[in-house]
Image (cartoon, rainbow, N blue to C red):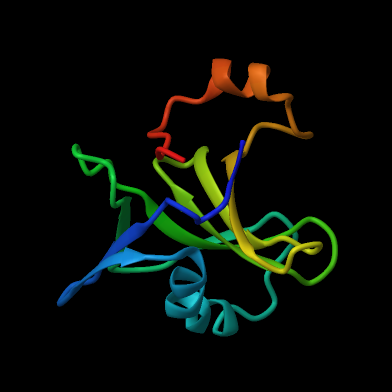
Length: 130
């Protein structure tokens, strides 16, 4: 499942502040300092960003996701993962064709993408309205 940010916003909670209704590129900018501070990461490694939680602005129940820096399996790209647990959540990354930030459903046990119908069977985390 690929989600663009046309109608999806994210709230970020730190120890001291709450940042509301952020677009995907604003979330990327806010968390990018953590990507710069993660040197020598191994492929498929993820490192938790401390003292920050996020939730989707349209989520009335405020399901909490924890942000991580994730190094992709090939190349030097680093993404932000928003995980509900150690296995499932969303990957925030820049689409190489459109150069816009997108969210893609992420599950650590999957080795290759699923078609949308199969994904729906596996998704247990909150799905933002889009």
